[in-house]
Image 1 (cartoon, rainbow, N blue to C red):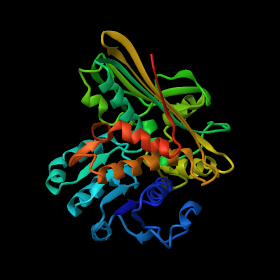
Image 2 (image 1 turned 180 degrees about the vertical axis):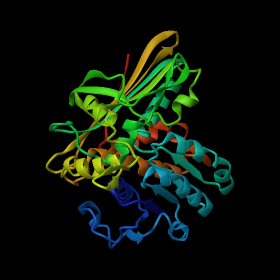
Image 3 (image 1 turned 90 degrees about the horizontal axis):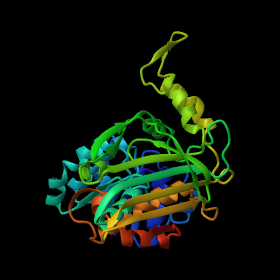
Image 4 (image 1 turned 180 degrees about the horizontal axis):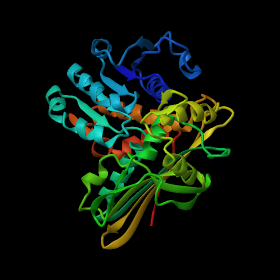
Length: 382
């Protein structure tokens, strides 16, 4: 079995590690920065089942060559590359999955389902933590009830020891965080699709093991579930978790225009405020995970009726940085999720076509695979 991982950043590296430790596959890790220095948790595999390949995602020939013979292609590149990488994988006859996060791109990916079926391969978008894990669990809750009134999803990647001024450190991509803080999110209200402004409708809650947190709207976490369940589920929303006060500060920064892409003149030089913010704030928000370990807090709650009785199904997760491997909680819950998805695809658990994670991934074997990796999702019901 040959598995191709596109992108050697944090998530791609964690994904490759998971494949190497939970399958007998040959793993090809491809990135335009390779060969380069590998994280220590991958270095031991370099001379055995791990192959490093330099690939330029902007060069179709380079991509086509690296996809030859791949049973599955796992895309951990920036979200705007997901569609062309998926198209190339389908043409190569390779299963495909990605981390997603952009609803408009996923809608375009879905239009390629006929081509995937013709090639006999599956493609699954939105396969990380959120979107990804949370949607698979929410789908299980929906299918477990006779009637569903509400679906509520809360997720946050946080430092275990928050520091001012934001109580936050970068756990994946600061540019991606800004996208989520500036895009409208989809929700269901009274069964109808609506949009909500990012960083809005802030509420506080107590999360066991993480303490007092705040939750607010951000885009992408629902994938296409709101569209799928319009007119069926009364209320559905996804909110991001942060330490209290974060949303207010980020909203001020956004409303002052510091996330804008349109350049302004500064001392005779045209500068995009967003680029300046990334250059200045980025280094201040990055920490060595060994010195400032992270955690991931997640809650999925589905409320409705079963057999004429009120029921609430809830899944909670609290995962932490792994000091043994040096893999962060965000890498574990996101990169490992992508790897699990691809292994299920290769095993034949996903039908040919283009799907979102909630449509395609069977929850029970997925949760069992997470448990094998020490990621415990606790289910409760009332």
